[in-house]
Image 1: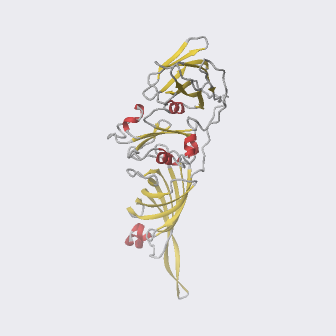
Image 2 (image 1 turned 180 degrees about the vertical axis):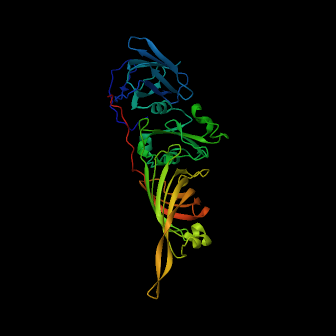
Image 3 (image 1 turned 90 degrees about the vertical axis):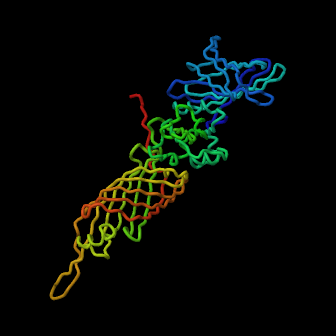
Length: 434
């Protein structure tokens, strides 16, 4: 299968009477020490895949280094202990064997397609492709590329689908019988909370995706990723996402700007928010707000009057919150998100005092000492799920312990805004060996 990585074709001499044409990809090696061959074996005439073909890997001095057999759909994966030149032989009963010399390089998984023919049939060449694998996860992805029960998409296929998000890959690349839900893994790590919220995969820039594996049923998921705790009913498929970044590197964060208000609690509010492109365990978003509030709605009419607030005043407030945000639980729509946050607010205010001066009356506004609110909020919103600039609208509510009156429920507030999905790239930390 072609990849998104350029490769150079090299024609090798014919090695037997049928003739072999070898096309080898030469790519730069990575830092670890794995070299392998993966591929399929098929009948040259009808392209049916052959089960039980024997694949042997010999060193150039004819010492056998590894052996395997093609599986139920003609796939195989064979790994050498070290880089170097090898002779790979492919044999199957009733077919003419084939042999080819392959140069294996560190951290390159070579992809091979082998067509076998009967004794009387002229053979085609073997086409070999290579794709650099810089991480264990990327090598794992390449090793399963030919499994018949999964849908696997590399960078070239994602580009061909014109996908703008990971869920675009699923919707555009997988046939209509998709799973009802997916357990999500990012670079081999579960990306799921204990309350059923899949976090972060919608915000991974598609340019940072190395490959996507889609499994439509629970039993199709590789054994190491089946999780009975997360999916006790075994009704969800699996979504394995592999990124292009090195372990420990960050993916782009998301900046958000918003504004809004309500007819009750807030006359207006301005908001700026930041959240990580791939969330951490506890903190995924930071939000700062400032605006005007209605003391009667926050404190209650009687309490507001006792504190000196007038009914027509709209004093200022400022808030800071931290929380988690992701696709809404139990709603299989990528555009609907939910958020839970904890934070603090500072409220200010003014009261009106009637003063007598030279036998005349005038109204004077006096500052009221600021007071604090501590509590949490929940929000549910709708956003455009793709693009560098994503409009959103949400409604939020919650409860606070207000130092002047005790616990108060917050009146629901509607906010509109936009997200900037490509800002804030966290740099990769590299060891220069010093």
